[in-house]
Length: 389
Ligand code: PLP
Image 1: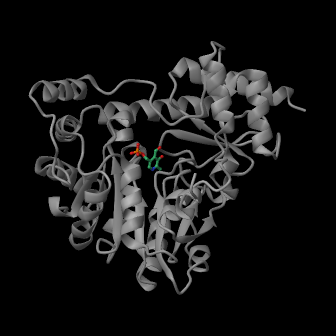
Image 2: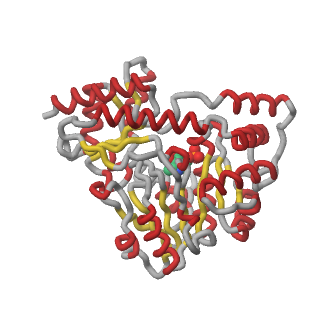
Image 3: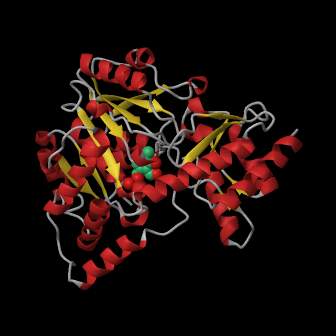
């Protein structure tokens, strides 16, 4: 075949993305083995019944057609209301663009603010798609690590040292995947200060904002930040709608107006009946409190079960759908640990180093399993760690 573009070939350059343990666990589970999957960030429960009913009703009512590119007006209005709540900044429908999932919003944000050759800063540990999203835009990026011993909180001085003359944007994620860290006001103020002084866009991935365990703080609310912050939101985690593919971006109206032309050439609008179901889900908060309470309970239960386990330390793990365990005292090579844990105890976890150097020596546990399964996984971990030599 003729040569594919270097941009597309470069999205996942090694062809490896750290998901090998997960796929091996998945294959064994599919083959009927008793594997506990703690490697994936998708809910173990279905979308709330009211949302499903709204989707079915929309299909029956004939909502089968093209939709407007930024999202149908009632959807943008509903999203703007949630953005006002999430970010603490009054938001209008014109500041919203709806996309098929948070990932598509991330893609739009990066395409919207970076030219090929521009430079961005990514705070690590980060969600696995971030590097590829920058590469797809032909942009260059520097990964700035946080420290496990700081609970994975970002440090403004370290970030500022990575700013170059062609740096145009910074990407952060709070509550964080994979660490579960919820960035403190001090951390966010430091980040905002760097962005203001160096005239940077801040891309703020807040898809876990309802799962932070307390009042959510968005950097968009900090002085001078609304005009330079693009917030990424999603129905996937907060509303239990991963497979429906619906998210949105909140930003300055002028940029949002430009991004509408990106939708023209990529998605050409959204799925009609999914949009109608989402309006109901957003306007009625279907599932939001229940899902938040469920993950808070699971986190507490699992971390309690791990607490006091020899040589295992919890880091970050305040919000989101994950817990981060420092296993370096048992085995410094987290990938080796994850493979051996799967082999010996039939539990699939993610090696921390798949998310950047800061999380090396850690494993990421997804809390997307019922409580008895999480307790059983903790027991298997205890057995594995005490037998590991
Ligand atoms: N951002 C983060 C931090 C995530 O963890 C995910 C999914 O796991 C996404 C964005 C993308 O979510 P979606 O495209 O399902 O909205």
